[in-house]
Image 1 (cartoon, one colour):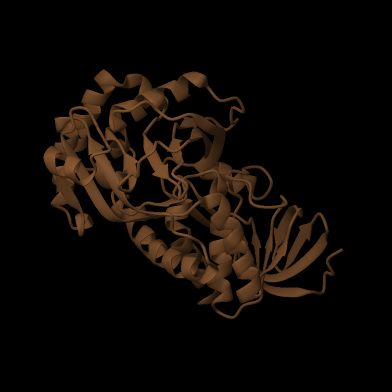
Image 2: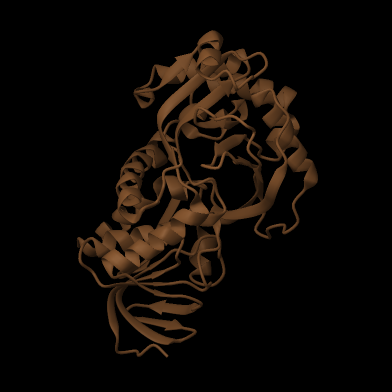
Length: 377
C-alpha cells in the first residue's frame, strides 16, 4: 500500500509521451514527481506510432510552434538518454500537378524555411531508388526527426527515473483525483498538483469534461515491412498526406488537389489513408496509416484497408511492398476543434489530451506549457 502521508509536488496520471513530458518539465524545476500508470508499461498511442516528430506542414496556430520546440527538446533528451535518432528529414513525392502547385505555394510561406522543392530530374538524382511513376516534384524538409517509439518511450522512462528522480507506479489505476488526494488501486496518494494524461481512455477520469469537449477516438492500421534493400532519403509521404496537415491543407491550392483526389481516390479518403513510410536502422519500414473515427474502436483490422495502403506504397515507390513483418492497430483521442485539450477541473488539476495524433510532435512543448501554468502562478 502507498502511505497516504507520502507527498509529491506533482502526480502525473499516464505514462505516455504527454505524461512523460509533463514529468520532465516538472522535474527540471526541482519538483518531486510521481507518474502513475495502469499498465505494466506504456501501451497506447505513444508506442504504436511512427515515432515521427513532424514539423513542416503542421497547422500554424495550434501545432507548428509546439512542434518546433518539441523537436529541440527531443534532440536534447535523445542525447542524454541514449535514444537513437534513426531518421531525419521529410520527403513528399508529388504525383500530380495539383500537389506540385500546392507545395510551390507552401514554399512561398515562412513555414518553408530550409525546405526545397525539387523537379523530377533533380529528385531522381538525389534518390534514384525512389521510382515514383510520373513524379511531378519532390518536397524536402530537413526539420523532421524520428525515433523508434517502442524503444524510445521505455528509454525516456528509465532516464527520468535515473537522472531526474521521477518515481513510477506501474499497474496502478487512479479512481479519483481531488488534489492533494488521489485514490488509487494501491491506496491513497498525496500530491500538491495533478496532471491527468489519459490518452484515449475517455471514461475513467473526468468523463463528463471529455464528453463536453467532444473528445472521441480514432483507430488506425499500420505495418512493419521487411527492408526493401535500399535507403530512403527521409520519411516519405504522398499526395494524400498534404490534405491531413493544416499547414498545407489551409492553402487555397489544397482545394484543387482535394477535388482531384476525391475523383480519383475517394475510397482512400473515406478510410482516412495517407501514406507515411519510415525506415528503421535495420532497413525495415513502418508503413501506414488509415483513420476511422468511432468511440468504440474496432479491434479487427480490415484487410481491404491494408490493400489500399499497399497500392499507395506501389504508386509512390514504383516497387511492390516487401514482406510484412507485423501488423497492428493503434488508437488515439481526437476532437474536431483543436489539436490538444488542456482543461482545468480544479485549481491544482489539469486534464491534458492530444486530440490530433501529434503527441510525439508536440508533447514536450505541451508539458512545458502545462507545468508552467500550474506552478508559475
